[in-house]
View (cartoon, rainbow, N blue to C red):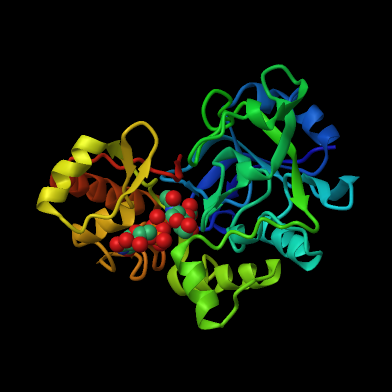
Length: 340
Ligand code: EPU
C-alpha cells in the first residue's frame, strides 16, 4: 500500500531548510510500494522528483508535481573473502551511518567520505568526493528501476559514466532512474589509505600518526569537515554550492599574469581545475551576509541560510556570485546543487 500526501511541507526534508510545499509526496519503503506508485494516476499525470536526504537540492518555489522520498533500508553482505567484502546497501540508508558502520568493522575505502550528508542512493548520482577519494572508486554496481519502463536494471561501474560530481544518473537518466541499492567493494586487510590531501596529512602529522588506521583517517576527515563546513542541522546549507571549474591551460596561464597566486590542479587534456572557493573569495563574497542568507565564513563555496531565508534568496545570491566571478575571471561557475 502507498500513501500519497498533498501539499507537503518540504522545509524539514532538505538541509537548506527553505520553505516550499510539494503538491504530492510519497515515501517509498519497499520495491513493491514503488511498483504500485508507478501505476498510480497521480504518478502518471505529474512531473516527479526523487528525494534522498535533501542535502543537494534547493527548492526556489513550491514543487507542482510528485516528490518521491527513497526510504529503502538494509545492508547485506553479498560476498566476502579474506581481503574483500562486497556490501549491497539500500539507497535510503544514511551515507555517514554507512561510513561509520564500515569504519567500525575496519572495512576500508570510504573513510575519506566521512560526514558527507545525504543518502547512499544519492552518492553515485553526483559521484560524491572529498579529500582525495570519489565514491566511484568503490562502487561495483548500482541497481534500480527505470521509471519510464518499470524495469529493474543493474549498472556496472563502467556503465555509470562517472565523472567529477557527475554520472549517467545525473545526465541521461536524470529523474528517470530510481536507485534501489548500491553495491560497494571494500577492503578488509590491505587498505589503500589515502592521506594525500594536504589537510588530512597536516592533522595526522599534528597527532604524530605516521601509519594511520581507517578509524584515524575518518577521525581526521571529521575534524577537518567540522572546522570548515557548517553543520546543516545548525545552519542550513547544501555543502559546495558550485563545482570547481575546469578551464583551458591557456586561460589559466593568462589569469596567472594578473593573479600570480591563483591555485590550480592540472587535470587531463591541457586543462586546469581551479577551486571555486578561491575565485568567490577573491570577489569579496566570503563571509558576506545578504538578508537572511549568505556565504559561509570558513568556505566560500558554501551558501548558508541563516534563518528563514527562501530558496529564491539563495538562488539570487548564487546568481550574483556567478556574475562577479564571470566578470573578474571570465569563468562561468556551474551549480553543483540541484535547483528546483
Ligand atoms: N579556497 C579558498 N577560499 C575558500 C575555499 C577554498 O581560497 O573559501 C581554496 C584554497 O586554496 C584551498 C582550495 O580552495 O586550498 C581547496 O579548498 P578545500 O580543500 O576546502 O576544497 P574545495 O575544492 O573548496 C572540494 C569539494 C568539497 C570537499 C573538499 C575536500 C567540490 C565542489 N567541493 O572543495 O566537497 O569536501 O574539496 O576534498 O569539489 C561538497 O561537494 O559538498 C563538498 C563539500
